Length: 66
Image (cartoon, rainbow, N blue to C red; front, top):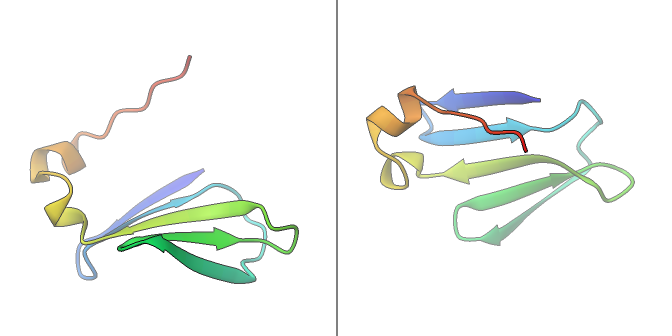
């Protein structure tokens, strides 16, 4: 998995695997899912991330596994 914060475009992107993206769909305003040829989600993008999270939250992202 890769996580990319693009400050220039104010977006946060989670790439779940490296399958080729064949379709994208904005499921809610500013939330875009990328799908592969088998209709599986391979990426999630959040637009306007600076309004969704503080600078501190973005600089200290934490991941939990259960």
